[in-house]
Image: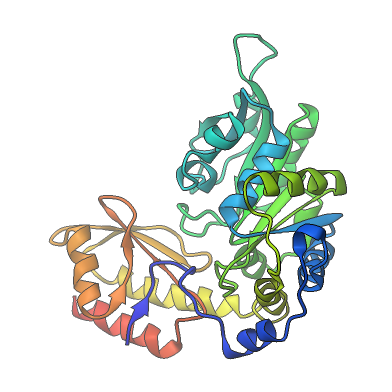
Length: 338
């Protein structure tokens, strides 16, 4: 029995999701004629109280489209130094949009309004023009940490005062909503654009939704085409997103509980160093002697438990709908033997 904790991107569609995909009516989405994609986009926009939405192949593409629409070449984008848009999108900000990053040292991936204010460049020809702030909720490298809505409100106020756009990389936003008992519309009111991933946590095989104003999404649709993301009969994939939005949000609480159970077992072991607070479905912990990180990953793999080292000293485990209570018990049993 392989227990894959490397990411929440490794899930397989459930039988019910597959059935929904097989029954989906489809059309040509580049012509705007795929009824299932249109349904998914309308559903997501309504859920977050935003004007429009755009279905994209990946979270990276939805983030990169947003950055492209919000900026001009030579601009500067403010984000945390561990942000996905900086760390894990292949230098896309520079390659696709010709912008540079102003990296801030946040608290587990979360930055503050004060930090943003101090990072805004003055109106000086020697300086890059600051045009966009990108937040990530939950924060991957922050161990699934969640922003406080009040902190986001303060950042939005700074953005409004300085005419900056505010984008949310909400790849795992549904995890934050469930963990904090928050409303999607709270976030729709705070951001100029939001991307949510349907693959991470939600169990879909592919897809991300980008949301914003009607003019923003009109521009985003053109950029998606330029990026090669214009799909045709992709409603078969979009149907998985419709199903996930209807059935897979509340169940994220199960993943959070499983993460807490495994984290509690890890905390009892002398080889576990600093363990980031487990707020959602991600566990990140430091490895101490006598183990090396690579050795511990290998030892777990021998027991058919897969996880990854995200630094020379840290291991990450991610819980998802492919992990059953039986699997969680097995992971805990193995940890106890190490």
